[in-house]
Amino acid sequence: MSNMETVIVKLIEPTKNKQQWLEQIAASFSGAVQLGLDVAQENKTASRARIHDQAYRAMREEFDLASDYARMAVNAAQALAASFYGLRKSKRQKRTSFPRVNGSQGIGLGTNAYKIIQSEQRFVLRCSTGQRGQYVWFPLAVAAKFREKMAFVKGDAKLFKRADHWYVMLP
Image 1 (tube, rainbow, N blue to C red):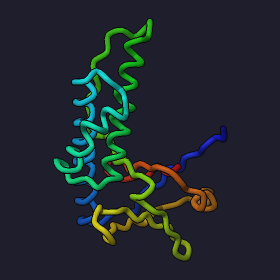
Image 2: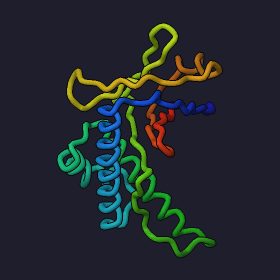
Image 3: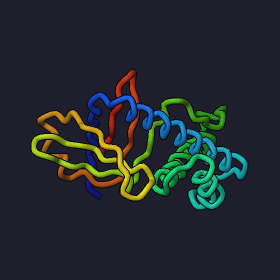
Image 4: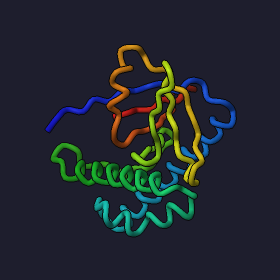
């Protein structure tokens, strides 16, 4: 099994429209994760298959999420539920409450929801809007020491906000 490195890159200040899109998709993603957690708690399960079967379609319809975003929301809900059930079995940690989504959940980007594109000396993150052929483009502030690693980015990523700045965590 090989080690995987992640690179965290700052998005260059998004425009007002892009900022609104990020905020809207973040709110939808958090709501979808909470829906998945509600299903997991109702059924007392951390099974990805059960959460997917009962929450995926509702996530897509209720929060208007594209398939890759809904898949990542199921994965996030499953991970949170699994951590809860794992803590409950612990000898040291008995009193835990079921997880709730807070405002800093971030946005899961599945492999089909984004692409890193290099044009000349710049890197750009292209995110799918969920509509065929429509994307939102975010210029990235990539440090010189990470430039060669950007060619090897592959796998699920995550967009998140810290303070007033947006970042992307790339595998």
